[in-house]
Image 1: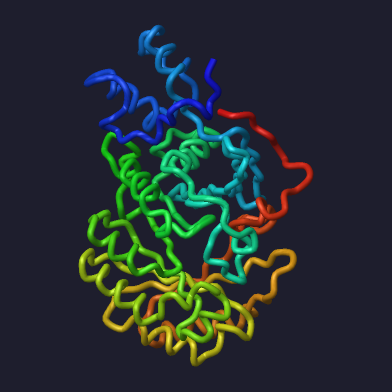
Image 2: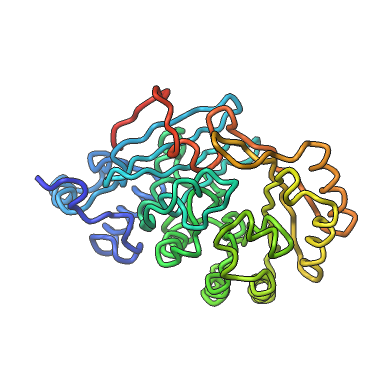
Length: 351
């Protein structure tokens, strides 16, 4: 009997290339993306012989093991052990009127941001399209939801999505496909540290998902201190790509800005930041820093964060402070994989 890792990952296949033809292929797509089946035995309207044939060739799940870490605020951090033993993470966040999941695109991250626990891990490997998608499908299953009940996806977990464009864009196409997760592009946000060629590629493909730029500083000198790889692209290059994306899609740009005490939280930096986005519809998310063991920074005081936000608002940039969820279970990306608790609250075998 073939081991799971030796089988073809079903979620890696475009909808049009799923096994079967016509009606049968449609049934399979429904089981995967509408009903959220995790086992072949669940697909009761498919002939038993056909299920056995496909089960011998294809795998549904991409995970060897999953550990959920529930937070007191209702969010759940998932630590996924992949079939090769490497680990990645996702965070499920329920709100009053929506269900959101923050997913990863890599094991670790090559960007090396000094404030990010994932950066401390270094780069493991790119996730496949199947591994990216299965984070959504597993979380929905574990929460007792049909896959399409999770309508908001944020690619803001481990990794830099625009350094894994082939797999990330393939996963996005399954999320948007009417026989896939049938999501609205307005409800999918891709966060990038600023890879101009990837931003241009997003505009070229016309995926029309929301672009979030993790800039973290308005000037190259500060940015290169906290993002070691930032020397590859100057802010002017990044902003040219962002302006092109905005011109092509007319989608409002989100700015992600982690607030670090004495580093990037000065009032002059707030004014400079606002200046970068003149003529672009943008929304600023200020992120109070989520500390982790051994980190070289301190988070900005609440009063300074609010002062920074007020300056941006005065400059005409709508601004929100994104207070962290799941802080009690280490919900900042990379925290669990970097240092796993000895006794996770639950261990789930592969589903």
